[in-house]
Length: 153
Image 1: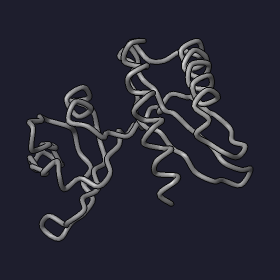
Image 2: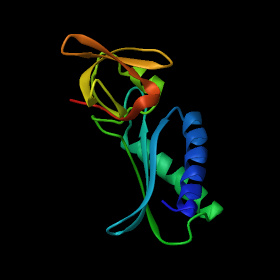
Image 3: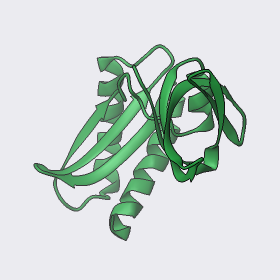
């Protein structure tokens, strides 16, 4: 991603996180990239009780107005706002805490015991580790070593 794109993404993330927090909505992820039909700004939002179409519409209106005023993006783009879905990404310590007891797939940056991908139940979390129950065995994974993680059905 170019530095211009990174600057736009950072600005959107900063603004959206603060506005959504005041709406009681969590910003899960922001994407800004070129796809087959052109440029897309995509926000994934969530809340404890789940998001509604009205939540998505309200966030879309708020972000769209802000993007128009700030004029950060010089070309045409599509704005999409949606739920992260049932297999939502887990990015922060609080995500793992929130979904303790649920099944997750975790991919590491650096292998642990010659393995990079672990699938198990989120057992417990602290500031440095996520402990997964993998087939009855606890696997302690350093949070800083997690490249990607998501819930599984």
